[in-house]
Length: 87
Image (tube, rainbow, N blue to C red; front, side, top):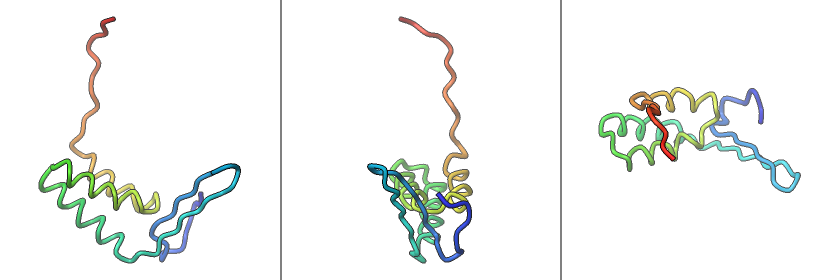
């Protein structure tokens, strides 16, 4: 979308619909604090509901602000290992 944005723009996403550019900008000052709050809550509880809440707020952040939270949310996850295939 945009490689750099004003520091007061906390959320930024773009998309295409019918050949038209859609831009979503969030100036919500609570977005960072809510992302931190729910990410910390998930880290302490490992509850799927808390993870969903954390992901809801984190997904609204600009990509550069989102990355540290996503690292924390996915820190304990490991990719599944495929050991066999049966048909």
